[in-house]
Length: 90
Image 1: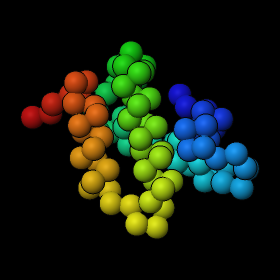
Image 2 (image 1 turned 45 degrees about the horizontal axis):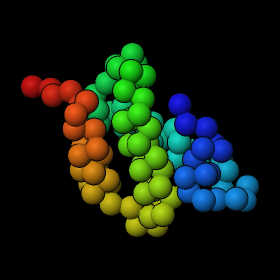
Image 3 (image 1 turned 90 degrees about the vertical axis):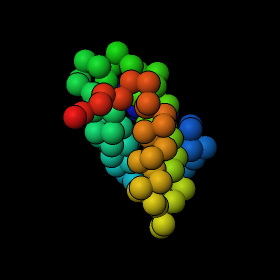
């Protein structure tokens, strides 16, 4: 969903040294957003704007905090971003 060039633009990275790392962040962020939102593939695509915002936030957070990322803090922020589309599971 998010390309390397898009992620680098959001991160304001204009060098290629971190390309492999950023590519991994893209993959991890999309999986984490899907898991937190509890969306099917179709719902994931239908809510692209919100999903992109959450993925951009995740990529930025993990890139900036690569040494000290607080996954609980990140997950709680994603829940807030995704609140309107997140499926409740009982």
